[in-house]
Length: 594
Image (cartoon, one colour):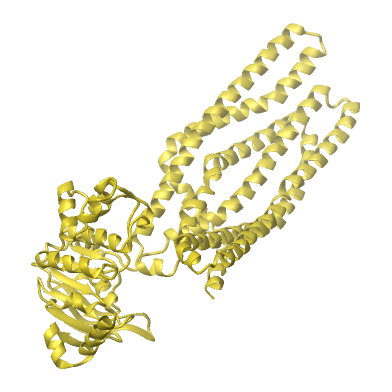
């Protein structure tokens, strides 16, 4: 069932929207000056390129026929000069557009990354990380050729096409009309193939997205795969996903490659008609040899940009799938945002109040139901209860990772929806249930809690949580490089580093979600000693399944089925002989048995 879920396709993208393409072009507005220069270079290069057949006509009819070698040498120099100017302009144009195109891609990548950092947890809850990576990396990269070459080339080719037609009609009107006979045939080919090509390239994008999502998950879960000896099954799924990409790609290429042969065949037919009627006009004396040679050159200069335009349209259809997916992500609005009139939350004392709070992901499955409580500044509150009872949801609502469906969460009497997210979260220290270690040094990972902290402050935070002992024994101490997700560290060590990171932030509200779940009993006792001083003057929420770690909490809230069913300190709850009493006794008996 898991594998089936992974290989399911995304829904097919919406049809091509010109507004999206205009939106992509809007990223080039800051480079108007460069585009104008490029446009002028394009005009000069195109005109120089189109002067070739005209110069050839003059050379044949005016100098070769009359045996004027001096004139022929002179016009040859002009021909070489025109081609040199054309080469210089094309080179300069390409260089400018490469720079502009890459800067646009840089901006697009930055906008995507900045945007996904603003998106709420609900966005990440419903999407595999691999598919998000495809949007930022693969889809943006697929626009590289379009932005660096495609757009300016299509303008160049359109200009060349128009000027070539002008030259053709000025040289011989009837031959020009004959050369256009095959254009409707080309238009018919484009109409028949364009939709099929777009749909097939969209399919390729979806298949690549599916494979990247599965690859990301497989790498993250490699230890589990090897532990359960599931390598054959994962290879089979990957082979299937890779085979899907191969099939989709080949199907797209088959239709894609119908364009250029079609253009070549139609161009050949047009050229044959030019020669057929040109020979007749030559016999009639209405054209010269020079005119016929020049006209043939212009015909190919007509069909070459037309061929390029068809290929550009083809590339545009390929890029359209990526453009749709990029802007689809950019258009996703975060569920949690600052109100227009949001204020900065002033330095807080730490009072937290839940006012009839209800929360659910699905209406028929409420996570919290009409929860109300008040926590005084400096209090330590422990949240206990079975898995899925709503403990983590409570602390997530305090941090405003989610908003209540009903009710309010207030800090110092202020509804947290009325203040900016930055001013709220910068006054909190949060250690999530899954400790995350970034690539870099241990020093950098702890300093992530407060970027302006000194080395001494980082070391002091590590000492408080008793991480200093194992850090100083590593080869480079605090400057030891750790890999992604801290693969060199044990689970307990990762949690201690995450704990030091949260403490370094010096928050008024401290949230510890299963902070000691992977720490041995001896280390846990040392941390408890360090926390006695640290928690003074801070409002703290501690989620722990080990009830021994929360005995000193000011209050313990027992959560079950989204409601607070018991509340009191350790001794009070034991005297009640209720749910907490049974949980404590059960754990005590289990530890005794162990």
